[in-house]
Length: 240
Image 1 (cartoon, rainbow, N blue to C red):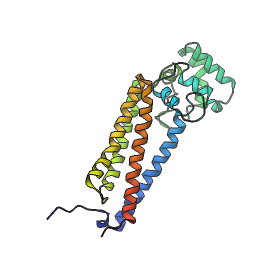
Image 2: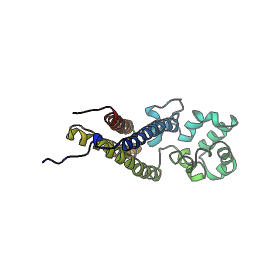
Image 3: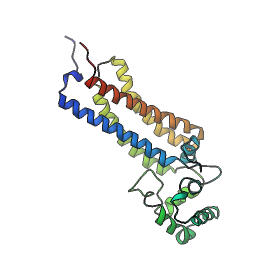
Image 4: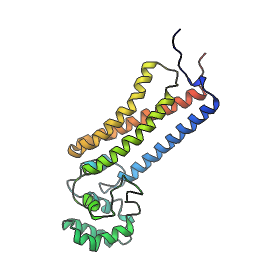
């Protein structure tokens, strides 16, 4: 007799409910992650909205201004309590972003208006503005540093891999062509790895920013398909 594998029709209603609330929660969490991604990266080019230039500045850097300069000239300017502080920060950057001037003029501004978001405890994906070394990374022209990319990538790989594994374990119960299912299981992992690798490549080759966008979109789309297909087959699909 051919070996029989479990499908959604073989599990209890309680297990279906557990699987469904898990998948829907993950789906909502991913949507919130996209919103966070938008607010984290948009405005780096000094313009509102997320564009490919924002991604280039994030990883590769800008040829015209630093990330901090672009931020205070653009999306972060409303967060400054006093508008004159923008000129103070821009002049400090233009003068070389040295530490003595940072301690006297820049640290009080950032501590008052910025570090409630720009600190590792609140958001590890944002630049750390709680000390000079972190501020200096974004005050000079250039993209994310290699240590920063390593720190974010290992968190990203560990966290997303677990999520994709559990989504895939549920998706395995779908009744569909086995070869299509195997490809569908691999795609989000491949896209995640390509996404992380493209961060490091974009640091040196700005055109790879398009790969960052496309690989991230592929991971989200493939994960969404698995979630929707699993929920549909759990509750609405019937095969005699």
